[in-house]
Amino acid sequence: MSDQAFNDAERAAVYRAIGERRDMRHFSGGEVAPELLARLLQAAHQAPSVGLMQPWRFIRITRRELRQQIQALVEQERVRTAEALGQRSDDFMRLKVEGINDCAEVLVAALMDGREAHIFGRRTLPEMDLASLSCAIQNLWLAARAEGLGMGWVSLFEPQALADLLGMPAGAKPLAVLCLGPVEAFYEAPMLVLEGWARERPLSEMLYENHWGER
Image (cartoon, rainbow, N blue to C red; front, top):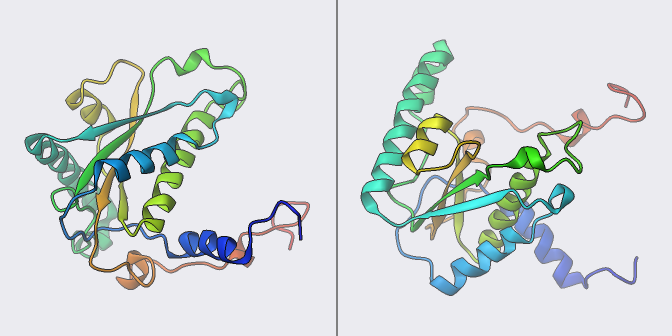
């Protein structure tokens, strides 16, 4: 084992946070103390980013009426998604897809404007800005789980409509509505598995060697 490794308890805690992270939809109200929220956002801010561009921007939603407007945008897209799913539309409409009005905190995670100026690492893969923001969200998610808080990533919204609602500049793009706060319990497995919507596939199906499809 490397001399740089964490000790047994520390490693176990890291793997536990990863294994028990869940995309939460059910929240129990409450609040997130300001110092805890600051700690979680600092964890997000420590994410890796290509070229150190740090493309993430977080908007904390504190106005109740604005929450309700965001939830209305999500509901509009939920209905459109159900229509697009055809035969599975009824099953989809029975799923709980967000906890915007129930959670303690709502954060909107967005890509900054002016990203085209950052070429380092993005000349052939411009989507690395999105990858960097996703890393920040994952940091936040894992830190929240370690702190005993649930978090859910809501992506059911029309990006430009949400950008307009929040007064984002041209070129900025919202990627996630994040619901954060206390929960009564964490799901034992991903909610979509528990609801019978999808099944988890094993790593062995997704791991190749040397060439695509070779195992």
